Length: 317
Image 1 (cartoon, rainbow, N blue to C red):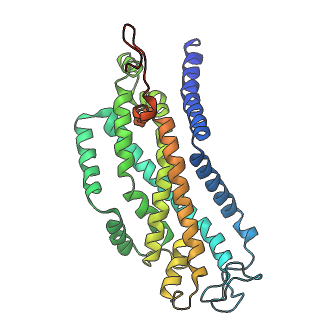
Image 2: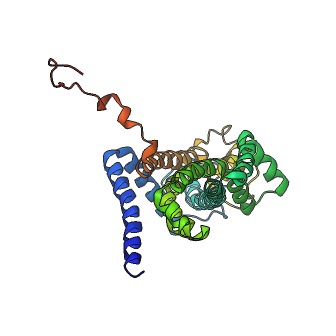
Image 3: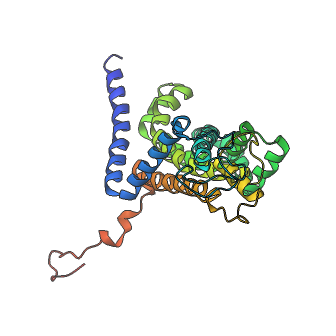
């Protein structure tokens, strides 16, 4: 037992080290992924330091109504005379918190459903996948609007609505990966010698699907932030909070376009677009690095070249 434990531990560490090396190599090979990571890091750090960086209060007017950008208000003011830069900085914290929390709920639900479905198979797989199919065919945004309307506007409700309706793609991906891991020799051997299901899942299955969950988490954050913005824009978010979606909703409801106040819309919109694009670039790179079976680059035209075969003339393929 003492000799087997270090070996098992080293195998798990090696299994985690390989995805990290693949991730680093992909970030070096794909500058767009590195840019996405840098953008996300900057936005997260700025959002965390928002209370220190915000030049004015988001509750008290500090200028005239829809004042244009100036030296005192770099991004102008909104319909209430509140500094837009302060709103964008503080709103970024709420949007990122909602995106991260909703993604955590979605990954937890989807990962659990996919894990149980792929590992046990049989009737468990059939029942869970039929439930997943039901949620897949229903438009997410429409169902989110209905549920959010029934529950009422609240930040907690928004997180739960998005998280509980965003898990289907994660469940499908995890199920397919777990089915592959379940058929491997070391998993079948562990089950043969009497290791319990919980121990097999914890020691052998989860370490293998964890990198895939990480990649899927990054992609899900972008979707969650987009859904949160959509719900806020439709008036189903927390009316007492400040988020990028709430900023856009107020600008739309209070006729910022009629005043030509583009600064009340563009900064928050650019922040949302930057986060979504950055998550997409980074998530795609991580997915390629951590799940090589999804890669199709070996079919690329650049991987084909003319070779000379033995016994054939020059230039033979």
